[in-house]
Image (cartoon, rainbow over the protein chains, first blue to last red):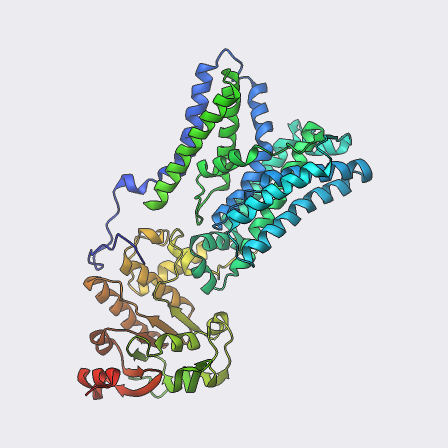
Length: 330
Length: 247
């Protein structure tokens, strides 16, 4: 117990409420304020460049769908005190495995193989993290490289077209009730993710594990099982993101998901999930992901070069991590 | 001691624990009755923590028997001890700092409604009720643990044990990290457990506290049980010489 605030207030007096400024949890709202600020900034600066058109705004939502799905998995992983760096590689492997299988055996087999590939990689990560007790940072750093290689060798760096119209409609370009399927996928995943995270025993146990794994353990929570579960969940959701990419682009390539890792981590951290576990938000991750998408979109419309975009995004992530760690140390 | 005639909640008989060639505990026997506070004292390395681990199911004794309300039990894990109504308040409290008081209260044992979702209303109302009964003064059941003082955290940990213990609470150095006022508050909470008809085994380095709180005192030295005394029939000098082995 290294609590610095060992206050000597007589505990017979009712506890004083901390000053207002300390009670307001800055980090909880920073994502909404940031979202609003960036939106307003682009709305004003880019008012003549088409930023505010329905077409552009809905494009942002569609483009961020895979990253949002990955972000949900990462919220669980970070909340449990682990990390998953391999999600980008899982996207590529799953999309390619699904594409090859769809072309040979049809949509159902392709979906099963694609999701199965992601779950299997998640299983490998999870077993190494939960039962061999290797740090998840190193395990997933290794599997990130390993499966990036697998994705490249799987099809000899070739792009695999996906022509099955049922698949591309369901996972990418289709619509139901006038709403694009990618929006449906995002909405459903966020809703289920939010409920599981906030309202189930599993979610509570994930948080407890990341907060204080010894306390979780002596309270009867199977900490290894929680760690395995979050790594598999992350793998499965990254695979779903891979299917969405393949459906939308009507093709799979080893480059899919390659640059998503940083975006997803940034979205999750900006969204109020702590890097060291015990606290997070699925809805915050959605807003964080939309914010990152809006940022990309706006920076492109502003005419920034790719390198300038990377620099600005990097600065935003730095700011987000700074707020997150400051909050933790409070 | 109106309850001293009832059956003991816990009986330890001839408990022996060895790790390889090293004997950590030998021939330890103790019984604890409902509503009774028994103190376990001894120097560092006397075997107190081994004994706690045996009673809480972390270690199985090499030989000897554990009887809970007349039934001989073998406890292979901490969850089995919990299932038998034994709760431990660990020295580090085992609280999840970023979660609320009520989530900690039900950590690992959260109630759910018929849709399988967390039943927060039950958790909150039970927490508020218990915290009030034990007079643990926290701002609310929704407060986050890390915003509480050391004494309040200890109060929450004891309240949690009280919620789940039907037979016995083990308290490991409950006031070691607290200031004077908070120690007094926690001691009052421990005292109030007597009226709940559960046994309390308290480990403490403070003889003042032991004499203030407990009905009996059990002394360990280098794994051996030196003796058990009724509080009324002993004094600090005797206990000190029992602990140290010097006269």
